[in-house]
Image (cartoon, rainbow, N blue to C red; front, side):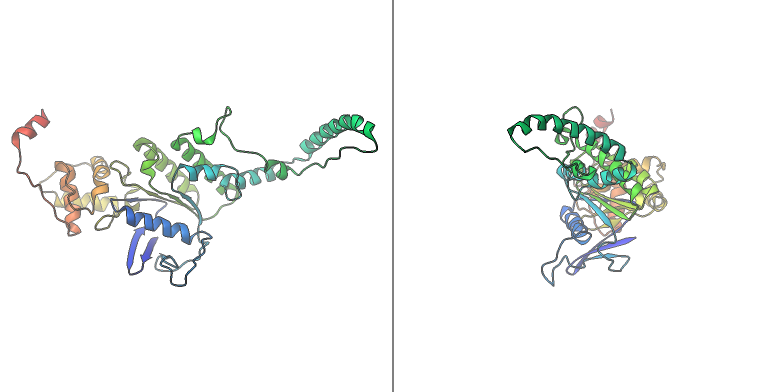
Length: 328
C-alpha cells in the first residue's frame, strides 16, 4: 500500500510493505514521516484547525480512520522499556490480562485466603487482649494484586541493564503473544534503529520481523541512515525507500538487477548474490550529491542517481600507483 505524508504543499511517499525500510541522508524528512504517523494513529489531539499534521496521512490516496492501525512507536531504548514495563499503555499489561483469563485462579485464591486468614487469627489473639477490637482483611482480586507488581530483569536486575537488542527481542515476542490473543492490524515504528543495534543485530531483527509479518497483520517501519544498515534481499528490496536530496523508491529486485546489467559501462559479470551486498553499502547515499564510492559501488550508485537527474564525477584523475598499491 502507498503512504503519502503531506507537509503543506510537499508530499513524501513510500510503499508500505510488511517490512519497510526508510533509508537515506535526509533525516528531517524521515523524522517528519515518523512523527506524522505517530500523531495520526494515536490519541494525539490537534489543537488548531489548520494544523500541518491534521489529516496529513493518506493510504492509497484515501484518508483512513485514525484507528486503522494499532500502533507501537519506538524512538529510543526507553520507549521499548515502557512497552515492557507495567503501565496502563504497555503491551505487558495487555499480555498479562490475557494470561489471567486463561487460568482458573479460584483454587489458588482459596489456598491463599486460608493462609492469610490463619495469619490474621494469630495476630488477633493478641490484639483482642486490648479490648473488643481486631484486624480485618479483605482478599483482593487477582488483577488487583497483579497490578501492584513490577517487571524486572532476571536475578534481581533492572530492565535498563539489558542491551537494546535483547529488549527488542523481548518486544517482538511480546507483540506475537498479544496478537495471538487479540489479532488486529498493527503498525510498529522503530526510528533510528541504526543507533540502537549493530549491523548483525539489525539483520537478525529484520528476519524476525519478516516471520512475524508472514503470520500476523503487522507492518514494521524502520529508519536508518548509517552505511550497512539495510537488508536489500530479493524479498525486502521493494520495501526500501531512500530519502535524500531526491527520493528513490526501490523497485522489485528483478528490475534493479536488469537495470544494472543493461546499463553497466561494460559487460560486468555481477551475480544476483553480489548485488544485495553492493546495494547495502550504497543505499544510504542514493539520492545524494557527492555520492561516489569505489569502482563497482560508485558505478551502480551513479547509474541510479543519474536516473534521478543527480550528477557527480571524480574530481581527481586516475592515480595508477595508488590503485596498484591498494590492489597489492
